[in-house]
Length: 406
Image (cartoon, rainbow, N blue to C red):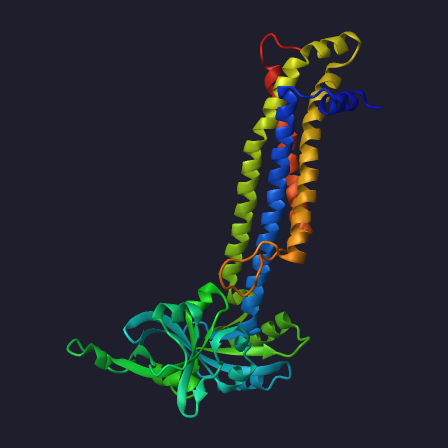
């Protein structure tokens, strides 16, 4: 058996190990264990929320979104758009008018984004699955209706099927601004709330769905004029390949975005947040590792006589140093292994039983957890590097001390 490894194990697992040094060593291992466990659990929960947000956005996002590169609106009736519309890979070609408007309900006011959708998008939209009140309907006979995000509905104190209508205001594109009567320069449309949806906080606080003809009347867009076209592709179609084909077809005047590109900023921000969480928790583990540094330093001082005896018996200085180095690595290793095991157990239990519940009304009842083995490996590597240097540092510092030698 390797002598340094054997002696390091005896120091760490000795039966009579109740002195201060051993207690500090246990605290060091426990600290590394808790830090590792926290990394595993928090990153897994973050993965769960990341997947949830992506799935929520994917329910109302199209496969490909066509927007003008420079202008605000366009009329998709050219030969290129007719070719896209008739493509065998496109299941649905949907026209959309989207604008920021001022909204008023009774005495309450707010700013929102209207999304005027056509009958095709109305039929295929899955937004109706996320209604918390009312129904997903944009017309009741000849009366125009709206489906409103929960955040806006709460801000306006709005309820569905009430007599009061929701007034939408938008500056006229053709009438000049009147300082005598400012309201004369505004277009006004009234819609009646039919439903309230709850999808994602940022989305709920922004969007109001209305019929596209009402949106065109409000914004004074021409018939057929849109701000974007949403393409829903048939199953099994290569989205990236089709995106390139349509880009070549439409040219530089239009931008075509896939699902990721439609929320690229959000996804990049979430990736940055995850990296920040990882680095912050690693920094916490660095602080916890000060206990390991302290316990090893004290152990080296306490076992100085043992080191002298081993040296006199013929042990090399390198072997004596390796005893304390290996003990530090053992403490780190035990903490990492225990932390990973406990962290994974907690994650598996949360996945199966959902014992930590979400507060309030949310689309899910319990905190989502998704274990990614890449995160587990990165955690082991990150904490392992910290433990590696935390064990070496006491030996390097003590070597520089006067009157100290093995």
